[in-house]
Length: 110
Length: 119
Image (tube, rainbow over all chains, first blue to last red; front, side, top):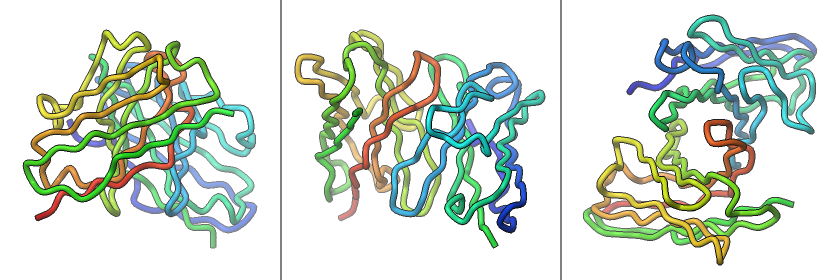
C-alpha cells in the first residue's frame, strides 16, 4: 500500500494562504471521512491539527482548515505565520483497521 | 494533562529483539485505542500497530506482521511493542499515540524513542 501523495514542499509569505493537497484512492481518502493532518516541527513529535476531514482540536487556530473532494484532501493555512513553518502529514483510514500516511510536505514561510 | 512517555529504544543487531514501553497518564487508559507510529530518519510517518482498549483486538502493518507484537497492561497504564527479527529498515523513532476514537485521529503523541538496527 503506497503512501498518500503530497507535494514535497510549498511556500508562502507571512499573511498569505497556502493549501497542501493529499491524494489517495477510493480505498482510503475517497472511502472514509477519517482524514487527519499533523504538524511536525524538527525534532518534535507530530501534533494533530485537523481530524475527521474538517474538525479542529481545541487550541488549534482557526487559520487551519481541512476539506475533501473525492479522493483528495486538502489542508489550508490562512494568514501564514513564521511558526507555521514545519512538515505537514496527512493520514487516512484505509479499511480493515489499517491507516496510511502521506509522504509529508515541508512548508516554508518566506 | 495527557502524557505519553516511551522508553526501551536503543541499538540492536539485525535479527535481534527489543521491547518498547509507553507509560500513559492523564486519561482513562483502558478506555482508549492505542497506536504505534514510526518515522525512519529523514522520512515520513508510518502506522505500525494498534490495540483496542481491552487489549483483545490487535492490528499490524504488513511490514511488521508476524515480527512485532503489541500489548497493553491496563493495571499499569502501559503500552508495549515487542519487536523480534529486527531488520535495518526497522530503524526509526517509534511514537506511541492515543486515538480519539476507534477509527479516528491520533490526538496525543509521546516524544518518541529511537530504535537503531545495525551490526
